Structure formats: structure tokens, C-alpha cells
Image (cartoon, rainbow, N blue to C red; front, side, top):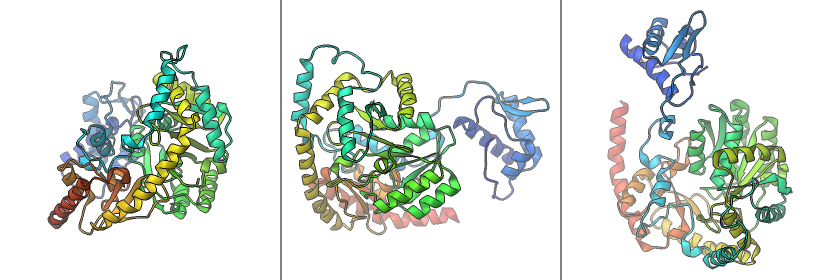
Length: 489
């Protein structure tokens, strides 16, 4: 059964009303809300939902039946025809938006950038911040190894050596996980994708922070989930709203970062963590905890997986932010009975996770003694960069929402009369890629916010481009507001 909001618009001509019903059905076919063989609502029920006369729905159904889209069964109703549907495009699953607020916009601009492009909006560190010498040593060692490291698939769970390393690292966070509870994946994003494949069905409700990592939104839309968001505070999600939304919306999943939230840099407090887990248990909600930024914390903050004992919390992560985004490898830590179906899904989707080479290379770097020193140097370097970049941004009227205790993101408010989308578009003309706030916001309520990567902000050209973009945005905003006001009238 599909669910539509009753129409509240003024009466329209009969032909337009019929076309509106036809379009509503076709939209739900395009987004797979209606599947082949599924029964449509009764004529009377659909007429009530759409705010039209039953005769209008009869005419719309007759049109679609004549086109072969639906078919009638005597005494039973109308059903979606068993015909091949067109390929599902991600952009079809939601209203079209300007490209600047599309969840893929920042990623595409950053991934496709030429070497001259400045990228204060990207989500990774510059190459010269990464441990390239340690990676070269690991690659040379593997090049001399015997057996199938250079040629074979990895095992179903992934490298035993790397899983042992992860087991020790998790124990340091208070998370007791057996080797059988850890699965290696091709990336952190693939880890979440596998979990969604296992747990979600189209139309299931998923709760996210607002703002949140923009690829959470893109991935959930690809899985045709219904996204509900709650405001983020400096100590975690707004817990009162979290509890209320769980009671009202009954979400299947909640996805979050606990250690250094992306994009805000917030840190989950122990009190919020306990209330969050109690609410999740009361409403049977599974939590996906993304720990990809955990190593940037000077001291570990509470981990939901540690407090929960991996009962309903699934921990995921990768080393793309601290070691290499080129050597792709992520992981899942979860209940053993959940790992088994995840293994099957990973084999079905990609015939396993990371190859032996990637996993063994990371294991060598992590156990070689240089990783701890590398991470300490990153923390110290970022601790110097954050206040320096924040001060330079503030001179342009750009104010950090909070000063994070670690990491490389600053979530900032732009000056008055500035729109983040406009600023990002103007800066792109100067070959500078920015990350406008609504890319991260499911509710589209972050139009004056911007995420900055302090590791990519030292070039003076970034601030010169920002100053020009802010000036142009402030100059054009009154005209845009007047135009929008006129359209609203």
C-alpha cells in the first residue's frame, strides 16, 4: 500500500486532476515505492488520499491500464503490471535540487579536481600529511612475499592478521570482540552498504543526525529509506528529540559518528550515550556507529559499541583518513550471528572484501611501530592548525560552531546575508572547492553553514577566493530574496 498526503491545493480542472493522479503513480513506480505485482489502493481510498473524486481515479487507472502500466483483476482491484522497470537513478528518488546541494556535489568536485584546484571542502588529508614512507616499506615487503598475496582473493572474513590487529585496537576502546565478530570490507562506505542490504527494506525509516556525513544521505536514498533527522548538539544528538522521534517514527536504524562527529566535530558525552542506548533498546533500534575519525581524538570519548557490548550497536571504520584512501579497506564489528549473513552479502555483491594485498599492507603498517608516532604527529599538527585557521576565518566573519577537541573539520556559520550554496558556486569559479552546509542536512536547514578542512586551508588563495565569494553572495542575496518572495506571492 502506498501512502500519500491529502491534497490541500485549490480545485483544478478535471484533466489536470487526472494527470496529477497518473503522475503520482508513475513517480512511485520510478522510485520503486510501487513494485511489479503490487496492489494499488482502492479507488475510493486513493480518491480520499488525493483529494479528488472517485471518477478521477477511475479515469487515471483506466489510462494507466491502457498504457500497460497497471492491470485490473476482476473482483480484486488494480495491480502494477509485471513489466520491466527503467533503471533506478538516484536523482529520481527525491525532488531535484540545485547541484550544489546534491550529496554527490562535493565528492565529484574533489575527486575530479586537477592538481591546481584548492579543496578546503574535501574530506581527507593532503598527501604529504600521510605516512608515505611506511606505506612504501609495507608494499616493498609484500612485493617480496611468497604465496598468493599479490594474486589471490582474500578469505571470506578477510586477513586474519589485520583482524587480530583490529581486535587489539577495539579492546583498547573497551570493546570486546572475538575474531569471528570482525569482517573486513572494501571500505567504510561498503560496510554501511552491506548493513543496509541486510537490515533495510524500501520505505524503512532511518534516523540520522542533522547535520551528518553527506554520503550517509546518498547511501540511504539509494536504499530507498525514509530519512528522519534530529539536531546535533555539542555533546551528541539532541537526546530529548531523539527519544521523541524514536517513539513517534519507529526507525529501523540510527547512523552516527560518536568519536569526532562529521561535520560538526562534536564529541558524544557519556550521559547522552547512556540515554541514547536506553532509548534504542526500548524501541528496538539498531545503531551503526562510524568510528572513522576515532584516531584523531587526543583521548578516546565514549563508544556506544563499548557501552552496548555489540548487542545492538554495529561498529564500522576504515583507515582512509589516517593511512591511505588508495589502499581500500574497512571493517565491521558486530554480533557473530550478524557477521555470517554480512559475509554472504559481501560475496554476492563483490565476491569478498579487500584483497590480500590491501589488508596485509595495512596490517604491516599498523604493527610496524610507526603508526602510533604518525597519529601523534597528525594530532599535534591539527591542534596547531585548528585555531590558526579558525582565526583567519573569523576575520572574514566566518564563525566556528564549536572548536573540536580533535580532527580536521570546522563547522562554521557564514556572515549575515550569505548563502552557502552561492558562496560555494562563486568560489568554484576561482578553482576552490567548498562544502556548503545543506549538503550535510537532511532537513535542508544549514543554508548559512559551511564545513572547512583545516589541513587544506593554509594556502592564501583560499581566503582570497572566500572573501570574493562572500562579497558576491552578500550582494546577490537581497535580489534573490526579493525574487523568491515575489514567486511565493
